[in-house]
Length: 297
Image (tube, rainbow, N blue to C red; front, side, top):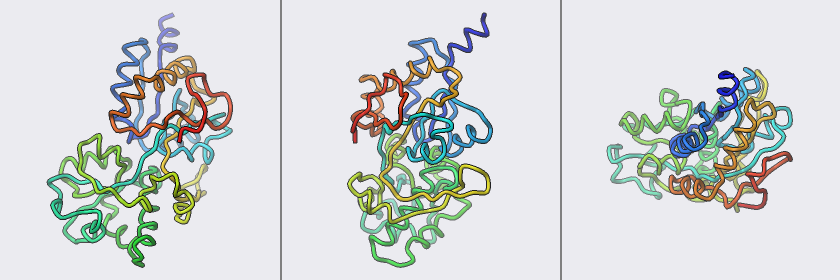
């Protein structure tokens, strides 16, 4: 009986690293309110996908930093539906300790980040959406500024030694002073109290009206099965979520989703710098009543 109760009163949550810090207070409150034990795993979104597709480890709720991951990798075999629920945008984050912190602006950031004395970090594009979005942003920046070779130069100045698996680990290195600048999400910069350069909307992947412009950039990432690749095109940044078909605790999952999109939690997350949509936008069928579909963009 104890084992059955423990199993029923559990929520297994796989969450994108960039959501971990702002989401934690809501997870703590959910657990205290319901008695449900939350087993949270934080990491890069494509790492979470491979836990499901290759290791057959299925969570109750999956919160990812790229909604397009669901139709590319998980629907329909592993999930019937998914929902867009938040926006973000790319920035260059730094701290007062960063070299040239007093000089950098939206007008000169490309020059500052090509200097030989700065250490610049980025995330792994093979597993983290912010990693491949960084590469997409480089391509868009080269075209926007009309400077051939700029994308390659920006990449070379963020060398492999400064690549980390996810947004949270990269932020930790910046906070510790081991890096001067990082390419990351605005929400991560704000939730960590970093300074940041707001990039032009033509390149920051944050403007829903510029979808066609963003599509002109593309990168290759590992595919759904080993040895294959998938093309990722530039798109406005949208976070996505689902309850997988084989969720081990579906009742707990439904309760959590209803809680996550309740007015008080929405307000709390927005205050924690998560740019939630007015309401989730559901794709597919079978989503719980706690998610209301519609054009929340």
